[in-house]
Amino acid sequence: MKILLTGGAGYIGSHTAIALAAEGFEPVVLDNFSNSHPTVMERLTEVSGRSMLLEQGDVLDTDWLRQVLQRHHPVAVVHFAGDKAVGESVAQPLKYFHNNVGGAVSLMRAMVQATATGGGDRTPALVFSSSATVYGDPATVPITEDFPRSHTNPYGHTKLVIEDMLTAQCKADPTWRVGVLRYFNPVGAHPSGRMGEDPDGMPNNLMPFVTQVAVGRRPFLNVYGNDYPTPDGTGVRDYIHVMDLASGHVAAVRTLLQGSQGFTVNLGTGRGHSVLEVVRAFEQVSGRAVPYRIAPRRAGDVAQCWADPTLARTLLGWKARFGLEDMCADAWRWQNLNPQGYRSA
Ligand code: NAD
Ligand code: UD1
Image (cartoon, rainbow, N blue to C red):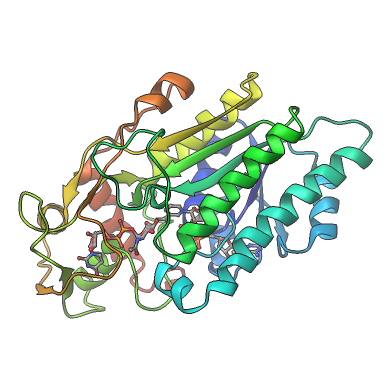
């Protein structure tokens, strides 16, 4: 059973490909390598012990995408492809609406066309990478899926628009089965140390910044604000191990293939950790110091954000297994063995 992974060479897509292959699915990675390195394909083959299928190209190319769907007949598509840097989305909103919203429109059109011209095959099930960013600044925590949605930047706005587009399409054509996964804060790496997060340039997110400080690529971490209404004053987030996230995708695909009409669920652990807790846990497992300085709050940041993951447990039979120490240990192994990420190879 083939599963097409758009953006499958990226951070979350590559770990999901490993988890799907381990469960007997046949992942097909589709990527244009705009934010990933082709070396990941060799690592995928090495870690999974099988050669990984690759379709190199752009999700904005609807005709090509239709041909890819007709060539492989996937039973499900997982749509990871898109741009994800919040700051860049504020500076270049059109890039984000074009690639993220345009990419989703292109994929959905290609799915309609491939089904119509493919001899009456069923439309593949679709799993979409959404984000906790759709909750904006939540009034309370933990966050359940029925919380009001809002956006504070163009990146988050694209996730809202795509969620709404998927809902409209499911209403228009009830044969569509769509799983929307709202990720909290994915961190960590494959335990082999052969695959992990490899941001291009200055990392925007906390964990890759911490690992780059620990490995000596950057002198210190800026802690964005210590005057939030949280126990130690620093921001609190629901960090989730990328392998837990990957198994959440396997559970989502299985649930759709077993007849579910669709769902929208949080993927988080249900626990929040502050920035300083992450720094301390990381120092402990790595044995390295992570010097930091308190800096002003970062624009657009919320004080605290963590999930109520009950619905994912009820609907998908999934729950996160790894804790903060595992996340730090695996992130460190990857960074330490690959100081320049995939470019170290
Ligand atoms: P990533 O940048 O590592 O992976 C995205 C992949 O998509 C990259 O390999 C990139 O080359 C590819 N891509 C981008 N545009 C493309 C296009 N037009 N055609 C083909 N390929 C294209 O990002 P990630 O962290 O793995 O995130 C995957 C998805 O999850 C994204 O949609 C992101 O918005 C969402 N998400 C990520 C996080 C996070 O913290 N990483 C949190 C919530 C949601
Ligand atoms: C950010 C995005 C969010 C996106 C998510 C993807 C913003 C405002 N939000 O979430 O839309 O879905 O990434 O994972 O960019 N921190 C530091 N120093 C750093 C980096 C981060 O102190 O160098 C702090 C932040 O202030 C925050 C916490 O660490 O309290 C986590 O930050 P980050 O990893 O960037 O994730 P989010 O801000 O939750």
